[in-house]
Length: 153
Image (cartoon, rainbow, N blue to C red; front, side, top):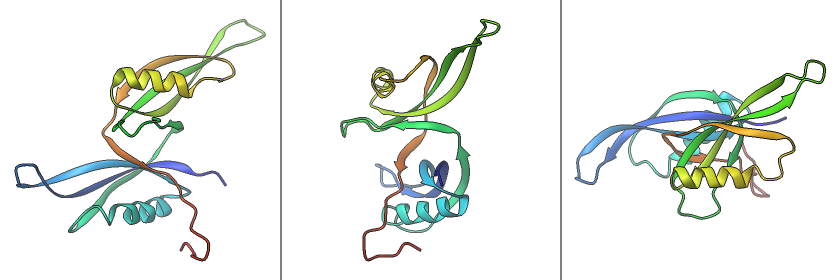
């Protein structure tokens, strides 16, 4: 069974650089099979990083075809790229475009473009970039297999 990506939002009190507490909402991506598993895994991932109480304020299915992570540790932003695969209808000769969304990790817009081009190398068929926009996504949590000897509930 293939997993899907879920966009999860968490609301919590964060200590700002000035020392003041502020209620914030942050967005993350979670690789899961269902909404229930996404929420469980998201809570597991967030618990060590947030002191105090937090609320999972939203979970929705993300229609992503792929996630391209940056090779270096410097990239701290996520960009959503809309790409169109171009095919030709053999009967009519008309051009057909099929849009897909790709999440790209990068340091800035130029880096996102470079990482997208690198990640799409070797793609069979023609494609074009329709748009690239920065997202509020803080991090991506991929599925990790449970270590041997431990059972994942």
